[in-house]
Length: 59
Image 1: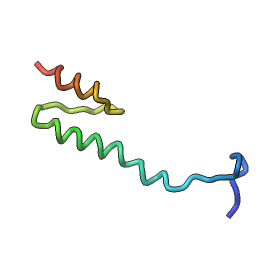
Image 2: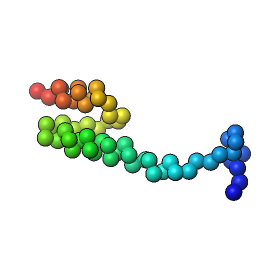
Image 3: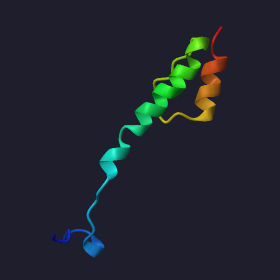
Image 4: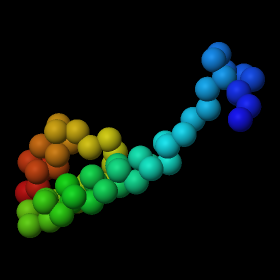
């Protein structure tokens, strides 16, 4: 193994790729929960304020 020359300490990233699917999975779970109310969110990050606004924006 060789240290990364451009980073203090020579550390290299490892394991970050496993977290890239989490935001999409959370968005899908939130949309599944909101589906009975006819609400769909498509923007991230998903915040409680965005969920609240989406729920109350319906006619």
